[in-house]
Image (tube, rainbow, N blue to C red; front, side, top):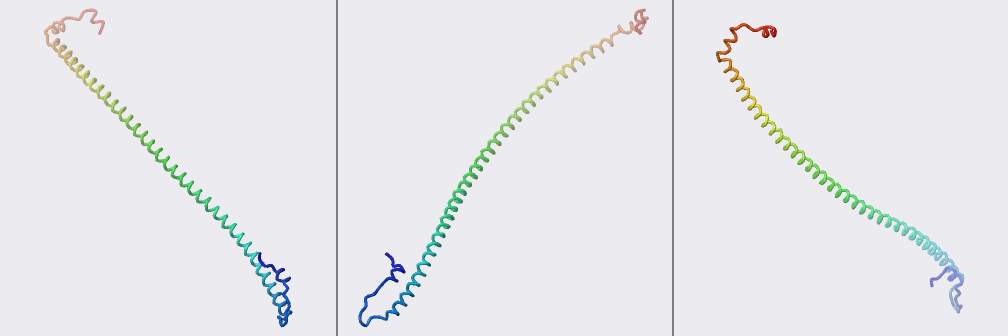
Length: 164
């Protein structure tokens, strides 16, 4: 058990012949009591400061742990957002490629259809031209025959006059 100022104050020494001067010893003990009390007060103050500082350190350690956890959570969230963004970008690219393929296939199909229609129209035009040429040639052949001259030389009939 530590010594208290009261223990020092109450301490009595046995008296002997040729012992120490009692007043000097008492003055010295009073000085020791004052110094000891001062040391005890300072020790209590330092202990209180230590406790306060330890509480602050604990508080800052707690804040540091919280910040570390927050940074880890933020990093994980950022990584997750980044991963999701990459996946979404890939999906968008795949969708765009699929749409592009569909559009290209539709365009090729329409192009083939138009090409077939053009070919069909060319064939029909050729057939029409051939038939028209045949018709014109047949009409020219009719005009070349002598039968027209006999019609031209005769008088038109009454019915024909009315038409004109």
